[in-house]
Image 1: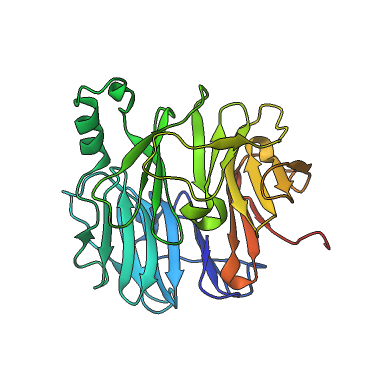
Image 2: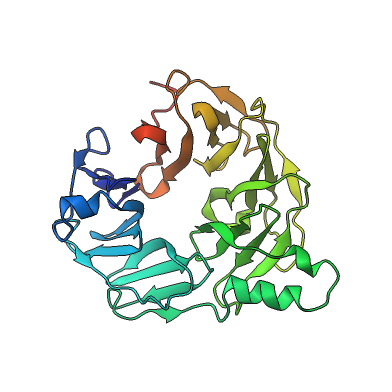
Length: 314
């Protein structure tokens, strides 16, 4: 889900799902792409939509990239090289004709001419970095093997990725030649990770198997192998936490399995259960706040579930 104004936004999903709102998300109208026929469209899982100043990008799977310059009235299909390392997993609109894309191999690319050319930002894919480290002969280096999932970008362009086995994570900042792997510092498997208030400088959050949530302090050293995480006080009953988002400096929301929701009012130290989605079957996958548009918030879940943040006054 993404908005390019307080009223205008898009949401995308599986089986070619694509909808637009012009009233701040109160109502959504299904949309289709004129350059995809209906039978073709339903075969795609649209993963990411990103808008800025009326210019937007949609990324789909199997690999498909669409671009609009007129707020979604017309779309152009952007060809991507089959030689790309990994599959594109996320894209961000950064300005006129400009975007930033990351692949499942941790390759970061930018374009300034609407996707006709892409410039690599990382000298080495994650695979190559891990191969180099694991063959270095350093004790314990073989720990850092496998593919990556859950790539996340912060507001300043730094990235975070979790290994598919959940045993370590990696960070990359603009200007670095390669990704840096880090130990998880816990025996439990990592489920997901993200940034505190959208910036790696504010710290990281990490969810673990069994419904655990850890939060690091601000100003962590990204070159260190281990991070100083503190466990949050959250009673999930074992349900896994899939996503966490800061609404402001103190209010934090966590969502997870069986449509569970939790809220913290002390910057993620203590959470209490919230019953907003209690009577709705399914799982919540994603929670997101738009600070630039009055801090409006959305939670996305299975079977087309979409929740809008209304605050305590509703």
